[in-house]
Image (cartoon, rainbow, N blue to C red; front, side, top):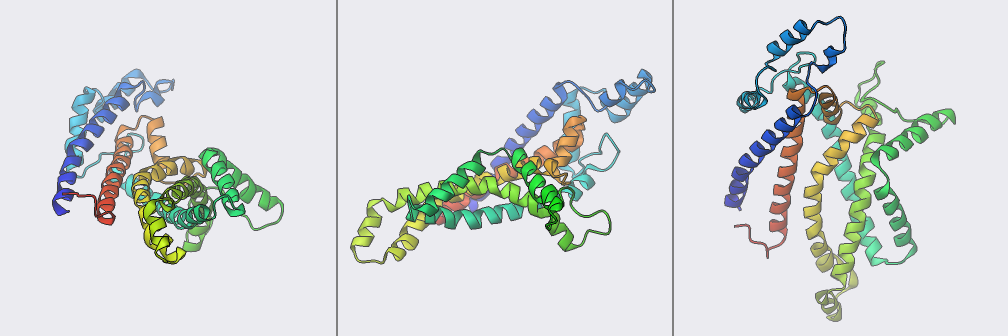
Length: 322
């Protein structure tokens, strides 16, 4: 197991280098630059723009700038923001906790509800419970995250306030007027977390239900029942464990998707996290900040794959990792 993990970690190095090179090339080859925002300003002379480009090192070819960026990044220096001169490391470290506070509870909530609902849906196939959960899962899985977030804002933020009911804040990470305590931050997280959780919860519920239906119809499950074992023991001791093996892989591979979904949710709710920082960086061709955000999500993706492979090998003795 240790050799497998070390081998995979070493293999991640060229993969991440390739991702960084391709992403940096794409960002620099598309139209626009960090100085594009000044070109339409009549108060800024072309000579001033040229001087800004020179000070930022933008006169160098993009591949030269990539290797400069890579060398600095390997030393822990992610550069500075082209917009305000702030350290990229400071921007990332200030936004990352907010994204983690949004994404981690979403993962926990999705798993905690998807497993029992999916299992019960399979065991009570075609029952009222199964039909109702199937309808809601299909609706939430098919609904765009942006639309779902806007509906949450309209109903629980705007309409509840009009109706005189307790309402939830619709934007931000905390109340700017004397807020910032733990409860205030939790209240601001409720709608973004629920919005992000519903899409994953819907997909995982249907997947678990399908896996359970497939497993409980296997011959070894029927054999265990024919030996006189209680149905509950057969389901939990045999069917459930085997049905959860593919789910482990799905969750591991879905972790980057949840963080990617946070990008949309953060912009809908004005929640200052990695997603909002990345969108702003791409809008203004802020290469240094955009690269840091992209590499953050790239690392999450490859680590999610690695964790899924390791857990699958641990839970299923038939899989040999070495």
